[in-house]
Amino acid sequence: MIVPVSYYLVLSAILFGLGVVAFVFKRNVITVFMSIELMLNAVNLAFVAFARAHNQLDGLVFVFFVIVVAAAESAVGLAIVIVLARNRESLNVERVNLLKF
Amino acid sequence: MSLPFILFFAFGLLAVAGAVMLILAREPIHSALALILVMICLAVLYLLLGAEFIAAVQIIVYAGAIMVLFVFVIMLLNMGVEERTNFSKFAYVGVVAAFVLLLEIGHWMYHSAVGGATANGAEPATAFSTVDLSTLLFRSYLFPFEATSILILIAILGALVLARKEE
Picture 1: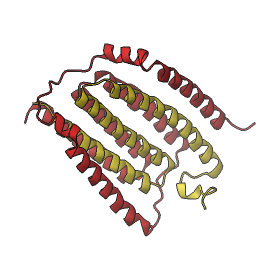
Picture 2 (picture 1 turned 90 degrees about the vertical axis):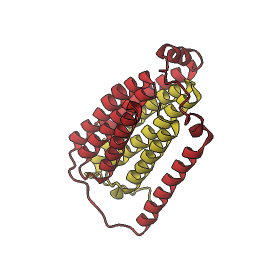
Picture 3 (picture 1 turned 60 degrees about the vertical axis):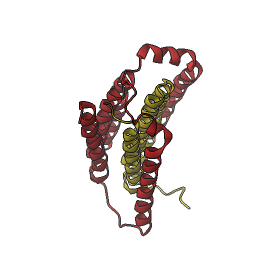
Picture 4 (picture 1 turned 180 degrees about the horizontal axis):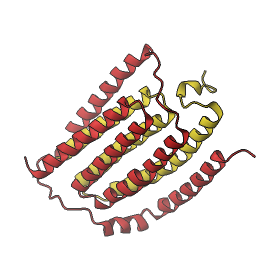
């Protein structure tokens, strides 16, 4: 007996929700970035589960692309974090308010 | 309870516990280690779903490369414990909204047609073939694949330009 796909989807939803909570709550820029990665991972799980449900490989290709884009995003994002830490001497997102209205 | 169910619940609960640890940890390095735990659990779940290639990529690229980058930056900057600020009055609204969103997504997905389609357990749990996946990737998705290589190149250049010391 195999695990129903809906179980995976519920797990994916829970992980995504926790990622949203972390994104809203955390004050450290790096941790905010990590919560974005958590949300991307949750979406990947949903993609693989849907691929399994339809028995099609296209979902896996999309997961591959999501991973590549996440790698590019974290490389650029962490470079920005390094510049931010150099200029502000703090990683608190509340101190980065130049564009805040 | 068969073995797939036991594995699913063990690693699913471990993944959720890791995500909760990510939220509760005050040191960024603890959050990073919790996220690595989540990623490894997800790799096991991918294996359970028969997606072997994606499980390997998850370990090598996500847990291996991206998280090492995160840990490097955390240790390089060494900013210490996260400061906590006072709860803003909108934070409660945010918590409630996040959990309503979570319940909504979970409910919808559980009752969707796709979720019910394989709930009978009739589908055989055969693994996806990596050969078929690569054929699809290099035939139908060749252009997006090449486009991502340009994206990676631009990301490398952007990271170099941003993180370079000003002369």
